[in-house]
Image (tube, rainbow, N blue to C red; front, side, top):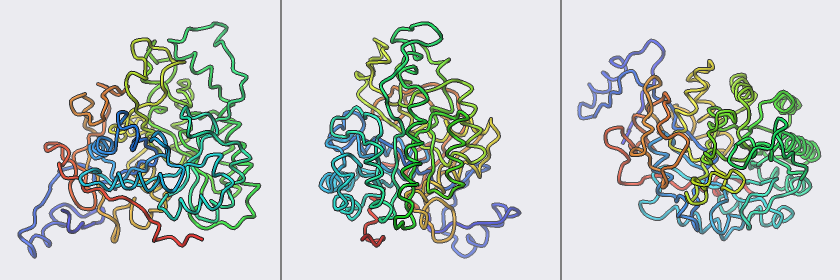
Length: 457
């Protein structure tokens, strides 16, 4: 266990930092990682662990093992695709109890609660979820594919916002409004269902644009409501970097509206033009878009228009991906990439001119702030939890199936060359992963239920 972390200025070398401590306490063990980078542990605010109820898709044990191997020290679990979904205080308590089982979680875990039509206009239920330990809420504005997690309308979002503002908790939103008028052709041709372009055509850009505009409108409409610090409307997995969308988000921020946005590594690495025929491992919603859009997303990350990155790790039973059939319209959507969060972000972003400071903000500091954990997590500083990742920015990541801790090994990152090799991960000062040792057998993650820390009304 790490008993102390000594921070030095830019001129302090390892000898300068370590010698006084070793002179006073010669029994201390020194972990020397050479020229590796020591960063705050990564915080993934967008993960589907699928437990309880759909453990055959993933489960907390394998998800947190993958997180530990990937340098992620805190996961915040989405209210779906567990079964039932986490839309009530009883289901939140059941999920928290599952996470608290002995030797279950290898990293810290917290939970978002679902915002659905049944509770959007029920302040008592939303407050009870907050008292039960939910870190915030998650809503879909498009069909989720899960029967007990129906999507909400813009009016229902607006109805819920006064309560969520008063609670001082974030609302995360899947921002697509499906209007039913979907083009059936791309470039004058009608590609078959094995072509990614067919799936792309079914989720056009306007779905995302219209949803973001509706959310900005809801924030304006409720701006006069009492709002506690900690509230923020957070747009998840933004796929579109195009000029007519990102500037609207930037303008809303400049207006003073509490809005933020994340994107995901798969949007930074893959583009529709390069998706192999029938490779449904790359089906997600919103879909992968064009190569020029990928570069626009990178630009928006670099200039701060996009606040953070999260994996949206969304695994399923491989049979649901229809890998043999390769039908993008019928296959289950969702990309598995939890363990590769660091290299799949660092590789494209470093090539685009982003540095270590940027990576720390996008993957540690801002996610901690979003989840109202910024007083203890997201930084290497006195008084903060010793959640740490040690990694080599210039070393190739291990993307072999043998090293993958996910329950199912199908991921578009299989065998992909990426830089950013995780060497060690520490949670609360305890080493949970080492490159040579693998994932530690004893799980030491904590369940984050801050209900006693926040003065809920």
